[in-house]
Length: 123
Image (cartoon, rainbow, N blue to C red; front, side, top):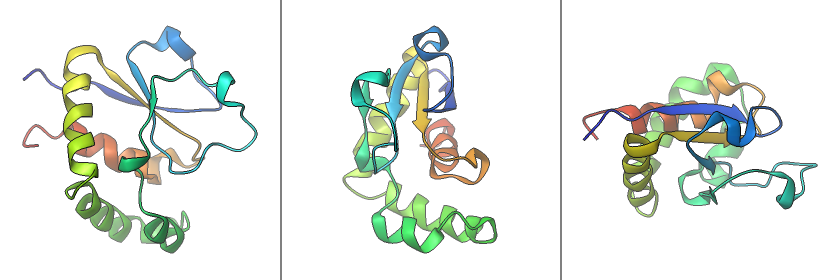
């Protein structure tokens, strides 16, 4: 399989369709202040978002990111997320993938962990 090409874009920013690739919202909650019709996306993949419990525990505290990442990777390896990750990995290898998130700190976000998991060639 070809190497997965995955980028992350904040849903409030970005090039829209000009950026190319399959556009997937990867947050469990719909972004505040945005109408669904205003967001250019191909799908909303809630099943790969961190669980509500994990998201609340993490609270976007950077000092918790390493443990958050480990816990989130465990969630991504289990159903139903694992099947979605496999499908997104396939899409990324064929046409590229744009992960959309409302998170301000993208570097310490679930989207960053998901990107790393999708791009991991060992699957």
